[in-house]
Length: 466
View 1 (tube, one colour):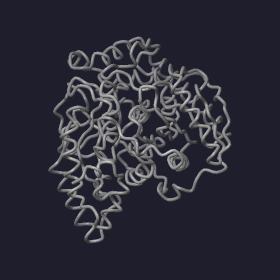
View 2 (tube, one colour):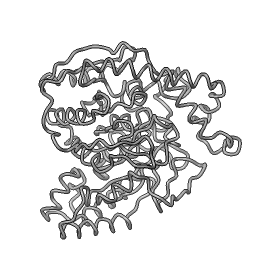
View 3 (cartoon, helix red, strand yellow):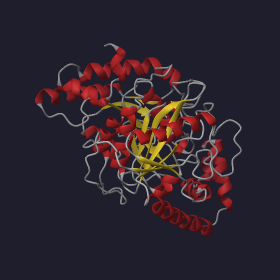
View 4 (spheres, rainbow, N blue to C red):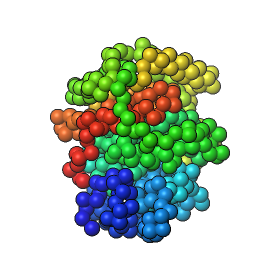
């Protein structure tokens, strides 16, 4: 099959399946052949599942013929290697248990299967998702399709690289401090971190209620379509909830009349000139979409110290009681974070949690005056692949978190936040604009992203490795 199908959206594929213009089986075969050709250079996938995927594609083809096709029938999807998949190796980027083959599927996997999606395989991630690059000692680093010397970001970097390179239109990511939005911005795709708990997570993340699961796609409509399939309460996740919202319905209704805050730095971040120029132009373009755009900062202190204590303590807690046994198998950067947390007391952690509550309250009150908040997604573009943080960065936190100042605040608050491509730097690397919504207002974020996409479409941009 002509590889032009590689860059068709899931929505376009489904429309052509319904019209009998394309075959889910032929599309699946083309996807696996493309992965076989490109993955050696990108290292996006850790495992591929042609036998399972082709069986699911054949089932989708029958379902279309019988009129029983699910919402994602025949749409290729990948699952992050932190997410358990029954019968498929889930190494989690860790030498601690690199051959783990779960006996169950996570709820998000059950749901994409039930919707008829075609499983392509597992995508690369750093050990337990601990950093914003997707290198690990099991599979090595992943690479950015726009420049294979650069990182695709992390921790959902394999997912972002796959989507950007046309290795499937749908990918599942997870985001504990920016792990959907960082790689989506670095790879020039759309990534949506849903409101906390909208997509159930089981087993619980190592970083607890900082983590969100969500879609990574080339188009906003595909993300809304996938979110419809994976959202909703599940008893295995006591903090999950159902919105009752169809995220595709009304997606193209526009955003005329919304009040939008633009903050270039959140009051404390440093931003590269190319990024600042592109994101500010993108933010001002919201005026052309009918919005009132106000340049303003939230007036809140940098929450990096709050997140650092919570996040680092969570990682240390994951290995508590067995650190000496597994020390040599833990990523050296992660081990350094764990060992430095020895100075954190229970009172420190409690104080950080109180600080989180105060930060949420401050952000909620700020957002009371605005429908959306726009920021750069990242302060700079993709750095060298395999590093823990940008080249030459001087860390001010225990963990490598302070270099991504725009993403982690909204893991603390649980608000919905998405990144949309908005340009390129002087080296041709993608730049992302972050769109943040009020508490549980995912529909508004997606509608704004769709309006921006329609005004400044990015979908036709194809990376070098694509």
